[in-house]
Amino acid sequence: MKNSLIIALDFANRQQVEDFLKPFTNEQLFLKVGMELYYQEGPQIVERLKAEGHQVFLDLKLHDIPNTVKSAMKGLARLGCDLVNVHAAGGIEMMRAAVEGLEEGKVQGKERAKLIAVTQLTSTSRQQMNSEQLIPVSLNESVLHYSQITKQAGLDGVVCSPFEAKQIAKKVGADFLTVTPGIRMETDDKQDQKRVATPDFARAEGVSAIVVGRSITRASNSLAAYYQIKNLWEGISV
Ligand SMILES: O=C(O)c1cc(=O)[nH]c(=O)n1[C@@H]1O[C@H](COP(=O)(O)O)[C@@H](O)[C@H]1O
Image (cartoon, rainbow, N blue to C red; front, side, top):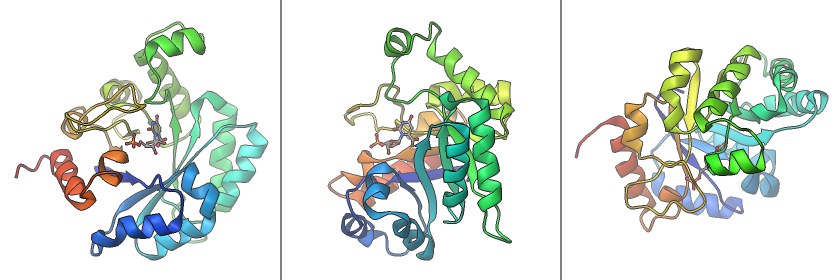
């Protein structure tokens, strides 16, 4: 899990995933299945990627009453994913229920998936958080607070941006996972992301894993873009 580069498979169907993965023939990848793909292809897409030897982050960002989240997690646990998530805004009781569901549903003899909570989405700015969510603090404070309650609920880590990761490691613990999307190369378009950083900045901030979508999946040469980002992330100069 630590030092992973997770590719966000934000595609509409299995065929598009297969086309994207074609050039990566000998690579064992860490792949993220999000709502777009999962809602179209269902559990089979996860089972298929696992059968091909990839690690899978199932990113469905559960956020509901504790009982519903617990039952949903119990079902998801059977898929044998490596990483799953909820929204920290669901609260401590909901997050504890998610852990219970994962434990209850886990595949016999296998480790349960790691569970992380989304703090403030990387598409959220301070101004939006203050005026729309009515949370009158800085993004750092809000993300740190969500990280602390996530730890209290017994989860393994959080989704945050690289800008908050160092402080989380200091205040919540160095082994608490910080998984960071919003990764872009210097010249890339930010699109809908607000808190954006480069792979080498993320490495310098000590994040556990980066999540990269469009900078790889929409690149004219995805394999080359993947290696370029991977080298920066791993601190390899070419
Ligand atoms: O939970 C996530 O993965 C997530 C949380 C967050 O705060 N921001 C965020 O961008 N993501 C996901 O990370 C991916 C980022 O994609 P790109 O912006 O294309 O690199 C998308 O699949 C998002 O759903």
